[in-house]
Length: 443
Image 1 (cartoon, rainbow, N blue to C red):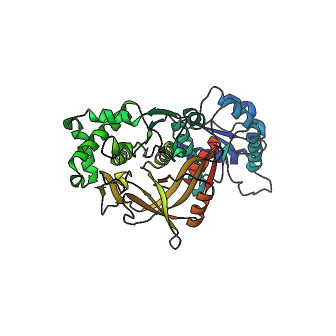
Image 2 (cartoon, one colour):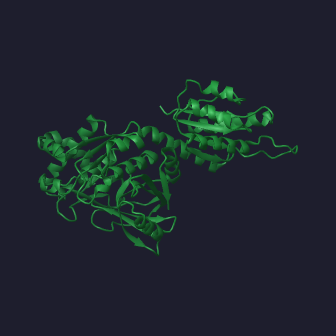
Image 3 (cartoon, helix red, strand yellow):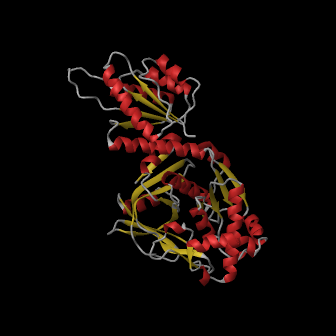
């Protein structure tokens, strides 16, 4: 259960009628965004009232609102009582009809922010009236980020095998991941799932093959032995995910699944992505974590791939990978077609261009040269374009300068894998970065 608490603070020397009206309007919006939010009976007129309201309570997000002016002591009481992300929300000053400030909330916000900074507590800030669409959108983005932060604490990430040589950027350490994001890592060798897959009979794998045939076009054109082995591998992965409560995974792919099993894992990862289990290849654990954040915030599978082409005239970047994209991302005119791997010529892989999407967000959770976590985000739209190269492809028209994104990404040493979320989640990613104390680079 996601728990939020609304803490409206103020002093009795300002307009109490206007303050009560502001609380009513603010609480109405907050309850729309989070029906279970804990709301006090009225304005908390004193630090002692704040202490009493927050005592013995737990929250995943605290919304502090200076309804009128209130000094930093009010915020200090919140910070003593609650160890959770903070959203500081300031309503706009009502029109003065007597020559005197009615609320003076903005001065109170500065006092609250100063105290938050003194405590070393990161916070998100929203300024605006409850009725403004921008206010609603900004609040919703912060609520989504706080929920994601909570969900990360119960996330089990599976690393299958080691990263290939030269791909160490995706290798995660359990202590680092838990300390920063709260999630847990489980690591196994690829051979464990390969060996398990080899024990299954065709009859045992039939339900998994039926599921795949309902999503993937043209499996009948792939070598029959490879299709059977794909179903075995799909069953092995799906059962391990289920039995171990795996929420995201990063799997080794080449060369093991070609050399030791004879069938690629690409289509298996595609099916897992459509099952709601973000799955990255090349054992890129931070890529899988990026996909999880994207899917959590949008409710849709994320695309995973490399930026491979820039079109300056269109201001687009093409993302591509060998064939692991969720079938649901495929263009409707082609569907998710089965094919063979572009290098190894063994199938099944997925072959399609991704369908158009009015709003997408490029996302990467990674590290800088000093090993510090950082996040990248860039907003745009996915264009209606056919498959660009063997495998799967997605063409993104950026809102910002696409060439600056490419040059900046290379010059600042970003990893070559990115998640693309099917929705505009930039504001939530920025809010998450503040909550986690991670720098966010927004292009």
